[in-house]
Length: 202
Image (cartoon, rainbow, N blue to C red; front, side, top):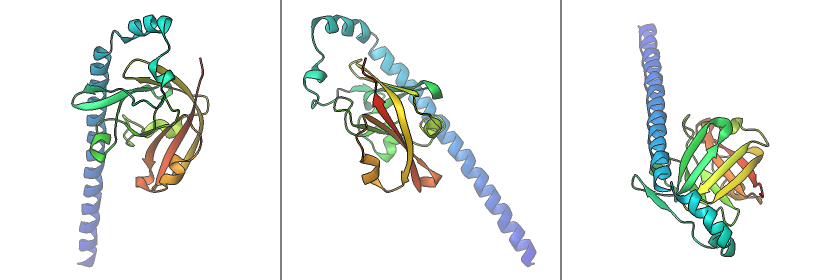
């Protein structure tokens, strides 16, 4: 009798694990589809920016250079205020970056956790979804990361180092003089992978 009970409990646990795996895969795929849709929408909203920026570059210094303390501009996409897009070529990723973070927003796309591209201290958080930031822990020093703000200004970075910090060690996450940090949870939230980047001056 005891053996049958234990077998039943074991089967229930296996079924629960399978259901959780299926749920996580569906959640990741849904988030990926939503992010893709937001990128397409952002690109259509900002299609004329490169041409306009070329003209402006010839005429004047960008406002963010004169006033790095300024708020980063946003563009509304699918009901979310986005500060721009991030591209990680080594992972084949192009994702919108929502202006402010919350648990609900992170389920849609990576979010600006703090800082600004203009002040060279931006931190971007992303869920550990396959379609979001799951792969950032596999990046290597020298890999390229590109952030394009809502006004079409392009900021190029390269990965300097990757470190693991405690899941709740916010102080260490924000420490250091990094131009850009990307982070995601690992190990069921017990730790975070932090990708530290330096801006490439062109």
